Amino acid sequence: MRDKAHFQFTNENTYLKHHLGENIYILDDIYAFSILAKLSTPEVKQPMINIYLRDLYKVLLNNVVSTCFPKKELEFKTRMLEHDANGVFTAKVIDPDTKVLVCDVARAGMIPGQICFDNLNLYLNPDNVIFDHIMASRDIAEEANSVNTVLAGMKIIPEFSNGYILIPDPMGASGSSIKKVIDLYKSMHKDVKIIVMHLIVTPEYVKTITNSHPDVTIMAVRYDRGLSTKESLDSEIGENPEGEKSLTKSKYILPGAGGLGEIINNNYI
Image 1: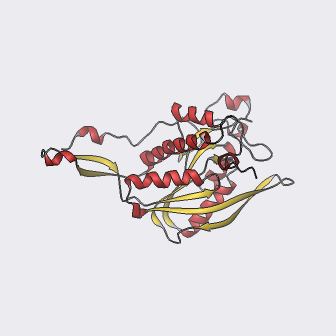
Image 2: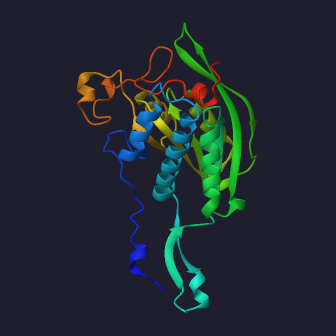
Image 3: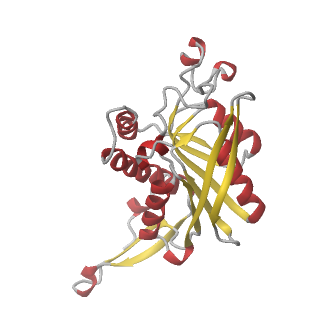
């Protein structure tokens, strides 16, 4: 059975209009936005913080897969085939042979990485889904008002090509850590498409990533610009970039959600 209705996927979810350039997707999803708003409040701690986090990353992964991954026409034999010859249908689905490498950037990215890895294995060939681990920490030099990221340790595959690299990390703040991870992967792997997945991104983050790696796809639930001018806040995202700002002097996001790495792990260091 080949039903036309199963071939009408647009491969496009709904995203906010912006002026940030190509390869940037800010979800227009009231469900995800509502969950993230709840997650951002000080009352939400364990165990709810991790429950909300897992839910949001399933939404983000759905958007990444639907928008970016290749599709393929396949035939499926259902349980009804033993009763009737029409118990077979043909449909367009995610290509199960898609190669994906998920990078867990510890510590805030540990749970998002596990969620992406586990769920990708549900519909892709598990032999093609890889889980990398990188320990990154940031050191803020107060005098220079800058952020230095240190990759303290890693367990990563040495060779990977012709696939997708997903970097799920909740907060896209200054971009220092993610840029360093992207630099590392680009120096090691060829013919890959890198997609970063965040709950919140800032104007500063988007500028850092797009200036250094314009080919990288950014997928986020929310774009925070809490320190922006009134003109910018009254305009569409990225329409007045010179007036958009979100980071405090200590490189935290406003309005943001606080230090999620601390809250997720209940470890305030």
